[in-house]
Image 1: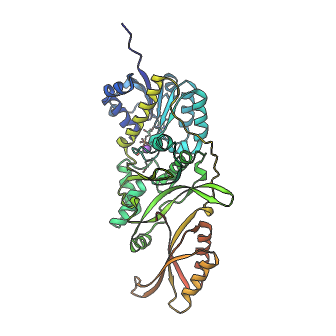
Image 2: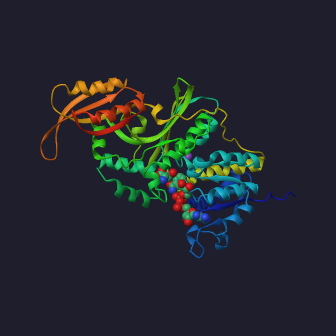
Image 3: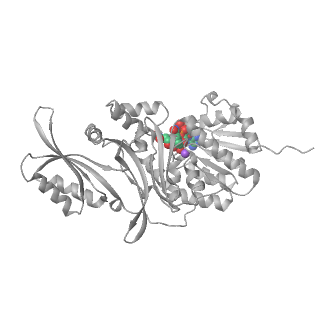
Length: 438
Ligand SMILES: NC(=O)C1=CN([C@@H]2O[C@H](COP(=O)(O)OP(=O)(O)OC[C@H]3O[C@@H](n4cnc5c(N)ncnc54)[C@H](O)[C@@H]3O)[C@@H](O)[C@H]2O)C=CC1
Ligand SMILES: N[C@@H](CC=O)C(=O)O
Ligand code: NA
C-alpha cells in the first residue's frame, strides 16, 4: 500500500478583502483543487496585523491565525502575500523564497517597484513567483502575455486597469456624479485600494503599466519609468468635450513600442484620454477592466472582465496557487519572466499621440490664423477645427475653437498648448486631452 503524499502547505499573509475570499475559496473547493493538482492544499496559517481581533469571518480554526508572519513563511510550500505595500511584504516574500517556498501575490505596487530583484531571488532559489491578480484582477492577462503570446511580437497594450477610476469616470459620463462621492462608493464595494489616492492619482494603474510593459516587451520597466496622470483634473467640461466628439473619457494605461531615430523604445504612460465610442475600450463600464493587445501575428486581442473586488481577484490568486502547486508536484519551475530585450524607456515627450484642445477665443478676424500658426511652428498638423458659439452661465456668448490634431510627439503638443495659452486672442484653454484609440 502506498502512503498518500503529504499535503502542500499554504501560508496566507493578510486576511482582508482579497485574503478573506482566497481563504473561503480554498476551503470550499478543497476536494476539487486536490483533484486538479494531484495533492491536497493545507492552510498552515493566516498572518494578520493585529492580535485579539475576532477573525471568525475567515471561517478557519482560530489556532491558524497568527501575527507572526516572519515565522509563518518559514514553514510553507506556497506563500500567498495579500498584505499589499512595499514593506513588510517584500521582506516576507524574500524570506519565504529563502526557505524554499513559491510565492503568489496580488501586490502590483511591489512588483512594479522591485520586480527585477524578486524575479532574481525566485530564480536563485528555484521557486516560482506568480502574480496574475496584480493586473486587472480576475482577467487572465499576464499569463496570456507571458505564455500564450510568447511566440508573437507585441506592439501595444492599452488597458483600463483601474476599476475605481473607471467607475468614477463612467458615473461622471452617465449621471454627472462628482469624483468624491463616487470614490466612496467604490471603497464600500471593495474596489479601491486601502488609500484610494493610489487609484485616483493613477499610481495603481502606473504600477500595472510597468508590469504589463515588462512582460510584453521583455524588458525591465519600473513605476518610476511610467508617466502618470490621475483623474483629479478631469472635469465636467472635459466630459462634455468628449461627448461632443463622439468619444468618452477613460483612464488608460498605454504601453507601446515607439520607433525613434535612436532605435526602438518603450512608451509607458497612464493618463486620462478620449477614445471614440466605436473603440472596444469605450464600452467598458462601471468597475470593469479591459486590456487591448495588438500583436504582430495575432492582430488585436481584447481581454475583459472584473478587475477588482474580493472574489474576482481571489479567482486569479487561486489560479496561480494551482499553477505553482502543480509545479511543486511535477518538480522544477514554471515559466517565468524575461528581460533579455533591454529596450530603453522613453520620456513622455517622445510619446506619439493626438490632442483635443478647446479654446475660448476673441471673436474677431485673424484669430484662427494666429492659433493655426502656433501649431505649425511646432510642426503639429491639425486634423479638424470646429468653431462654435456657446452661452456662458451669465448668458453671454463665447466663441470656442475646438481643435483635434494628427499624431505628434507629446513634447511638441504640450509646447503648442503652452504657447496658445499666452496668445492675446486666446481668453482661456478650456480643455486639453489626449485622444487615443483611433
Ligand atoms: N481589492 C482589490 O480589488 C484588489 C486588490 N489587489 C491587491 O491585493 C492586495 C490586498 O488587497 P486588499 O485585500 O484589497 O487589501 P485589504 O486592506 O483589504 O487587506 C490587507 C490586509 O492585510 C493586513 N495586513 C497589513 N499588514 C500586515 C502585516 N504586516 N501582517 C499581516 N497582515 C497585515 C491588513 O490588516 C488587511 O487586513 C494588495 O496588494 C492589493 O493591491 C489586487 C487586485 C484587486
Ligand atoms: N484598486 C484597484 C483594485 C485592483 O487592482 C482598482 O480599483 O482597480
Ligand atoms: Na489578472
